[in-house]
Image (cartoon, rainbow, N blue to C red; front, side, top):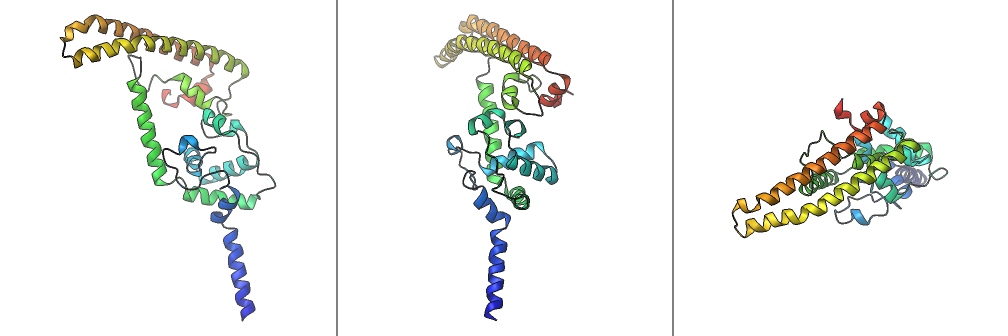
Length: 258
């Protein structure tokens, strides 16, 4: 009887030890945070939290089958071009080392099942949505453009996020051309924003001092002129960027244009 109980206990222990919950602790937790990170923790993390990994996987894949296949392949054969995260984030964290020899395909099946079932937490998803909303509001507040419409995307940001992705497939020649466009665009916009700030501050100060709105009409005219110039730079950037890209690459970056 005691022997039977011992065997049952040992069997239960082995079963628990090989469960997805336990495997993710022993195989993944040394790098990836398994609890939901606080907003203030995210900038200091050396590796992406598990919430973030699955959040991004869910953004680009629909079926559990494709998600599990991706997790298994990336764990054994990681490469920057395969990443579902933004290219700039991958460069920040680096590409994970291969886990060949450290984890079996059977273990990866259990790990991936547990990942998709347990992550991301509702708290993390809500936090990300709030951060994205805040980023959009901040970008709108500091925008030098006359037109702030999703139909006129910020191509430089889109490219930074997708620069090394295999799905985009930029060639070395394309990257060289796009870097020139990016450099010229950022230089021109930065120069305009530098001129805009003191003008906008002057208008704000005039209103705080309760001056007649007519007193700032000349300043407003200068602001409008600069914003028109910035908008021209923005449109030129979109035009030059899309001219470098193929139709398939444009469709990947801007599916809503179709």
